[in-house]
Amino acid sequence: MKLRIAIGVFLSLLFIYLSFWKPDIAGLFGGGTGIAEAFFGQTRIDLPGLGQTLAEAHYHYLLYGIALLLISLFFRAQRWRILLRPVYSEIHYWPVYSAMNIGYMINNILPLRMGEILRAYFLGKAENISKSSALATIVVERVIDTLSVLILLGVTIFLFPFPDWIRNGLFYIGAAVLLLIAFLIALLVNKDWTLHLLRKVLKPLPQKITDRLIDIVSSFSSGLEIMRSSRHYLAILGHTVLLQSCYILSVFFTFKAFDFVTSQYPVIQSDPLLASVVMLIIITIGIGLPSAPGAVGTYHGIVAFGISLFGVSAEAAMGFAIALHLANYFPLTALGLICFWGQHFRFSDLKAQIPHRDEVV
Image (cartoon, rainbow, N blue to C red; front, side, top):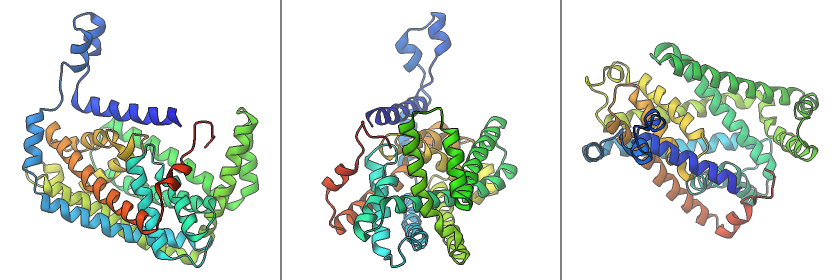
């Protein structure tokens, strides 16, 4: 546990460093510069310029984006409720909505997106549902989100002028995700055969770890039962479209807040919705990286880099990343706390569920 926290914090600090400074490794090993000068002698961002960018932003547009984010939570909670119905047909909306927002709050205060796991616990506690079954539906939910992003990526990769190295990287990411989806489909179609194949793949690992992983995957399979019922597909699709639309429009309004939809940035101005979709894909990748609480650092670095593809200055790019992060962080954390207390949970419940370093998770 401590090791994973350390890795997350390290990645966040690394991204923060690379966002603000340019390391001169060649100069260091060439003997021309000292250590301090090599790592902190060249800056990427002018701090007064960053401050001016943040001061001149039109924050009423950012409020529109926050409103869309809050609206999206209703669609996401209802979609999760649909996924949970095969597990518990009488599932109520409020506990689902609360557990989801508690998970977002935990992601913002604990590292490595532990809220994704712990929200299954809080839903199980509120509705007396198996934690493993609830967690399996979260896996399905993430697969659906990934599929929707892959579809968006499949469209934008041919319409947006990505640099070749980014285009190749996106192809590799897409291939890896498709491989994971194929595994989940195989688990749904023939669970026994898939687990047998997985056991063969994991054979080099110690028996204890292999058995633990097999048990986890087996328990996840119960959450895939929703995919056997085609009558839910249309509802899931509809809520996913509404959800992604809210996200895309939220990014668009953040563009407006920083005057990016102008002739100064022709790529954005020519097709602001396409630019918003591109940024949403980049943001999704940034959120998925291991990091410190709230994806601090990794989120800022990835988003600032992404918006720089449109010809935005380093100062404006970081201002955009900071504003967008805060617009997500504070509302979700506050709403999660309200739901946490509204369900009469205690922080001792949360502490008891955090895995210790001697546990295999």
